[in-house]
Length: 174
Image (cartoon, rainbow, N blue to C red; front, side):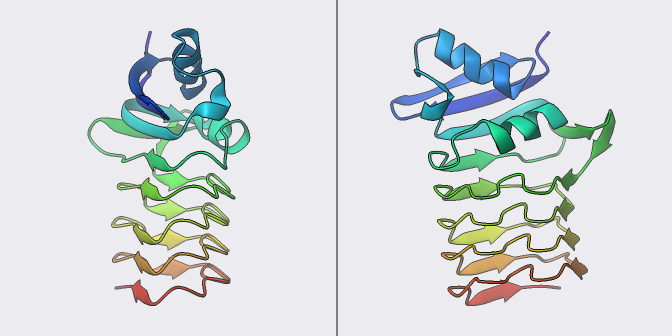
């Protein structure tokens, strides 16, 4: 039974897949002959269902950090994240660490950003995190192209959260 609906993007288009996991969704795109391997994935858009720790680990360990340009993981009515079987709105540490090609990231609904979660996403220029209350240590470390970040609900910001962000000219906090 499908647990998650994901759109997998690649150079020549995309495919909407219903699968048990992100890994299986990517495998379906490979099996359909749309991509040769996971190294050809350029976009991951979670549409509905449940994101799990296994999906986050697949993002951390197996997707091509230098090729992924767009990610959407908007929590809400149609999409949730479960950690250890419990619904959570905390993006785990190092989720997108060193995703150097990432130019578009949508994370509505997440209330906490883990340590180093976006560290080294050097191509992102703007980031809006409308629901984030807590920002982890070094969460946005070395986002060298980031010029604008909006955190309208943030109340806790970890050590060196914005360290090495020399292009940052606009920071919106409550």
